[in-house]
Length: 155
Image (tube, rainbow, N blue to C red; front, side):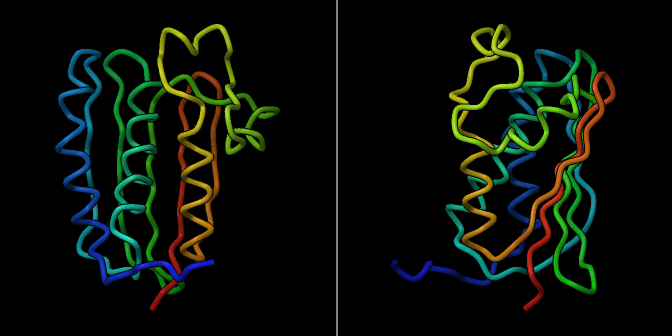
């Protein structure tokens, strides 16, 4: 085990950059990306946190509905910094929710080819969350959308 190379990061700033970068991918489907919050600092590995943000936001775009929205928020809480990525997409059935962080797991095998991806994105997110001592949770309802929350510990 090698120690994680970390630095003080403005999670909101990184999320803002990610949202701006992904707008071009969202536009063809009419998906609108929004970001809320303000400067919120965490101790983290920049490359890993950028990958976590990219994976969560790109999934929220990929599994959204035409003319849907993706809301990204970063806020300071008493217990740390909370990142939320909420979408108005297809949602995840309850019986699949505990498995979505497994490597190569796909909720809908028939749609996976048309939507692209490797089935690794959320497994990578789970690994990054664990490496940073953070926690992750999912709230989802079929046909309504999904909210993935990551709470980074306060420093």
